[in-house]
Image (cartoon, rainbow, N blue to C red):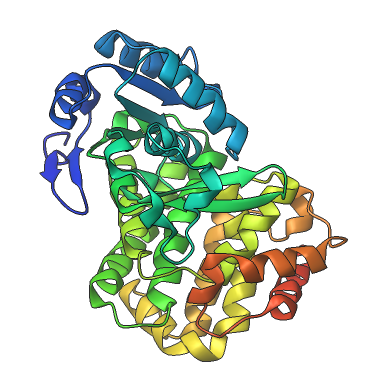
Length: 383
């Protein structure tokens, strides 16, 4: 089975896919031009077997001060370690937070302008000194964000309590290692939440307006894979085949959403910033409320998705009911209130969501009032 799941891909970057391929990390670093890499990982992975092994393979130090919603302070601390060690690139290993942090540290390592000058607004990315962008090798340990094939990092501005997207085309990792063995035994709740994040990347990308058949095709296949393998991976953390397909699907979701995202992410970003909630779980809870708001604009696409998934009576309603049932099977709660989110800051959530870049990809144009209404519905459980 492991040989069947082994392959090398060159889209959207170089990916080495297959169980056990962490052992090839020294070769990956050599090909990416890293001689003195800094390992960047999640705080929760420090001391784990995979991080110890990574250190042994590279004889490199670790920066592990990365938490669920990485902040500018994490980037600053990482840069201090990076420069003190005279590193020439980053090996980012962990969940989306570690990957985003590692990519942004590598990006900022040779810049003279402040971090927020590179927010994903207009042509801000052209301000960067491209010579100062260090290479990255990325190794995801969860199947969710797909940050390993992304050209951006989501970083929290502690001063404004806003999540900002730092973007540059050259932030794309040089080499990605998709080793499903690193995701074996991931807790059920994390598997479910990150897997739903990958599904929503595909779903929102497919439903986003605009002409992009390449993204649409990747999004559709990503949803099919997730529908097949996420329940298996959640039910049995040792299912290597399911874990491998979920890693592939997560990368597909992040590739597809170059087309755009939508209201789910627009709301989830400020909710995560203000309430420090898990990104994938927040998305999973919000999804049906945004679907209900967008129904008139997405009915035809939902019919296509439900037909692809083999649902009886393919339609918007069939897909909606399937998603509600899937959430229940995975143990995803129904309301934001159940994860400690209250409606007392709903106006702020609406305002911040409207300003989020993801809002522009929603199938129906949204403003702060509309997004506030969706948020309130998700807190109260009103569908």
